[in-house]
Amino acid sequence: MFTAQRISEHRGGDDLLTAGLGLAGLQAMAPPPFADPELPTATELRRRAIWSNWRGIADLTPTGGYGDWYGCVANVPGREFHAFATVPGARHPHRVMTQVPDAFVRDKPCLVVTAASGSRGVYGAIAVASAWGLPKGCAVVHTDKGAGTDWFDLDANLGARGDGTTGTRDEAAAFAPDSGTTGVAFKHAHSRDNPEADWGRHVRQAAEFGLHALREAFPESAPFTFDNTRVIAVAISNGGGAVLRAAELGVGDSATEWLDAVVAGEPNVSVEGARALYDVATEAALLMPCALLHMKNLPQPPFTAQSAPFWTLRCASLEAAGLIEGADTATQARNTYDRLRANGWTDAALRAGALSVGFDLWRPVAVTYASAYGRFGAGEHPCGYAFAPQNADFSARAATAVERGAWWSDASGIPPNAGVGIIDSRATGADPSLPGLRCLRALWKENSADAERVREGVRESRASVPRAGVPIVVVHGVDDGLVPMAFTSAPYVAQARAAGRNVTYWQVRNAQHFDAFLAFPDYAARYVPMLPYVYAALDRVWAHLETGTALPSDAVIDARPRTADRPLTAADLAIPH
Image (tube, rainbow, N blue to C red):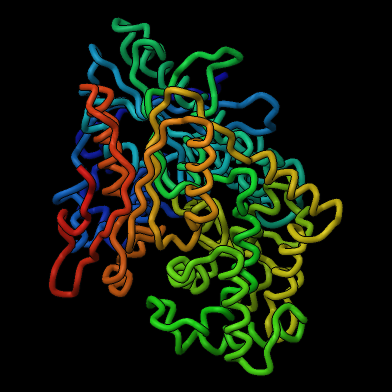
């Protein structure tokens, strides 16, 4: 089941939790440098990946409280056990990595299993799971759930080795595409595996690797099994969806109970009868820029004065295409806004969704997921999209060695990111992204062989009911504008409860999807971070398993953001007791 295993030690100035950077190093605006940017070492890549993933997930601003009254960035010495694992039927493996602290509690073993959020690499959940589990003496096992930052440069015929360094096609064991001749391929988009369909199995395999790593680390204390080791799953966003999918599963073909509890933060999870992420993302990519012109008091950035001309152009383009109605911009914006509200969007989600519009997040999600759901390889995207570094005119060009050197540590797994952009072969006219976006939307709404492939991939990813007896806590921000709770966690919780399952639901007001974007002062003044609630839910679950105390009750939490002259405090979060 596990291949290419390797072990590394991390002590002193290179620990498990922050790679020796500490809070100050994680807060630094510049990433840890490479001695040779064309050929960074595995140690340098790991340190930079840890820096990148902390900064991409956590609110590390001085007024946010991280490392002060919540969270942990302690120096945790220990070992890492890395491997590739492959679910049956998959073309490509997923990465698994177990962090075993030197202070692991062997006489009462615990294992935290987690999955990266978004399409991030194997360190993508370090701020979520490792920050909570390692200081408690638990081992923490991660998976990139078949996505991640494993790249392949088709022009140079080079890819990422197991340790993240650059290697030949034969050495790129995690991902080497079997199609495409030019540009850059990433595993989530181009593996032809539709990894989301297997996210639950990725998490379960990761837990099995965690037990394997513990047997390797402490053979004198073995065996470590699901019967004698406490296993808690936790993750956020796409990872949150993955741990909920894992809660459906036994071990192998048996009904073995292997999970003791699950905590899912802001989960991207889809159930039958609810709107899927691909439907939501393609709708938002097309319509939301116009609809936002109808709304007041949008968070900054995006800066409305600079964005309004582009959004106005989108309104006109949609009207000319017959997709909306209205003789002027104001009417067009109101018409578009009304359509989104009728389709389930709340004002809170639309307002926070302005960030996803301003940073062009909807289009990358739609491009990548269309390819993944349809199992299209590199060079096969039905709407003609590809990934590559770009010239000033947005045309594709070959990558440099310096750019390649940083992809594994710096990329998010979904371009545009880390110097790799989206090549849009349909771009034309005054609103150049519109033709491609309409094609992406057609893959959901219209009838074609390609559209059916995409919709089938979505159906494969639907969640079912969790196994009986597994306590589950779901935490979601009411203002989430990327995976709105009305389309994800709310229908999941309703489905689980209809089947008699034990699910606690915390709904946090004044909380959106991205803690890291609280670095923008206007976002910090509007929203609170989600990670404190995830940690608190883990604490409540731990107390339930340890002492039998009751699981937390449902709560709609009235959180209060910080102000310009007052930092965030624990009292502001109103975390249920």
